[in-house]
Length: 282
Image (tube, rainbow, N blue to C red; front, side):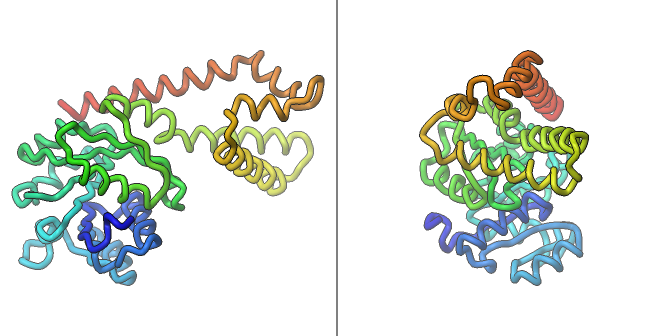
């Protein structure tokens, strides 16, 4: 986090992901006065100002209150708006980009497409975070082209690590796989929890009790997998006693081809990510 000390960080867009990153940065010791957010919502701007964060109205046209003001003084500019409106949003400040590192958290928009929208500006790093970033438990995939300096890569990694784990990919197309395994994946686990809770209720537990047990078990299993030196497959084997209850459950999952179901779901996510990227490039 030392790399961010004294740096001016501007967010274009103040929605959930931006606020998750901001909370992480402040929690890691970044001074709120070094953060600026450009967002058209007066309610969001007021909320940010209460946290002593600079907030500007990108739709304003004054010398002190617009997106150009946010970008001019920044060391890092985080693009945190929906990809469908990115072209319109960045057109307001593209001309004042000079030395800033641009980090995009917009899903599907390639660095090539972003560069075109920014008038050929190339100092761009792409990030694919996920929603647990809101509680600083996120997982983010990062991609930078070869011409991005090591200093800027370190800066991008420090920015995103404020909300959780970061992992670099060598090829931009690998961000589709990141989307499948982490970007969209919280929903997979929520869906599994739904199913487990429903099944436990059918077996006689009340819904609150079932939810508490299922959620704590998911948390505990994840923490065990994170802290263990053993692979998940080995952890599974160790808790699966021969002819026991766990073995019965695992064999049922195997008979229903659970692994193939997961692979199929992740491939559907990967394919849709590719499609969205192609649509946005048009």
